[in-house]
Length: 254
Image 1 (cartoon, rainbow, N blue to C red):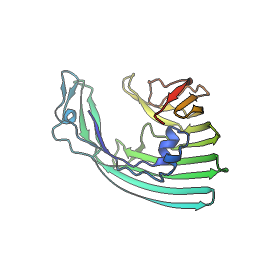
Image 2 (spheres, one colour):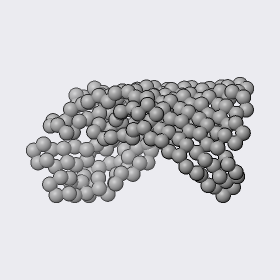
Image 3 (cartoon, one colour):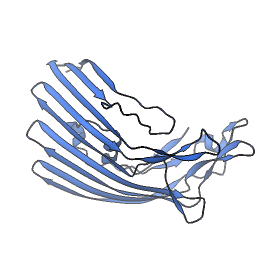
Image 4 (cartoon, rainbow, N blue to C red):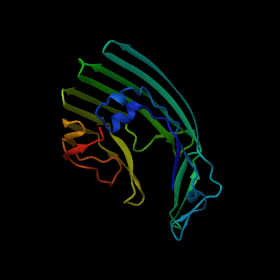
């Protein structure tokens, strides 16, 4: 079991990776900052699986230091923000494997992992019932390499990501659509020995929704995800959802 205690995450990044159609309540959230690191778990320290894994009682918790700064602008129907951040992670907990005994364990990585980036957010309210929003994120994430004083690009972290969304209301009708982009990133193929680095391609994900209020507390809805039926992977060897369409009747206590 892994316990996640701390990280640096921003609202724009979350929206870029998994687009959400804008919601009036969520729109009031300006920024989310989380300190991210991994604490030692019981399995890390004392776990044991015969012939496969042995814990490490000397393991230390990860520690992180960082900062962020942002500038925000708002004038009439237009809002914009620019955020920059930087983080340094030490004593990172990583898995190690002994090819002789075929036993794996966990250790604290030497050196410091570097993460820094910028995020840009933009929103424009087109009248009383229509809103356009967009964001872009750039991430530089590197970890210590096998050769001292070298840094390698961290796996599963795209440099570029972003999204754009349009949503609105018209009487009892609500609707919206979004398009998100996730850039290429590296991963590790453990199906071969020795394991090797592979490249996961960039992809676009489109989504849409529509709902109609039949009466207070009764709403007919339809929504679709991955409209382009993109074939993509976030983790090498693991499938992701294809095109999906849902429809139904939503009841509430109103």
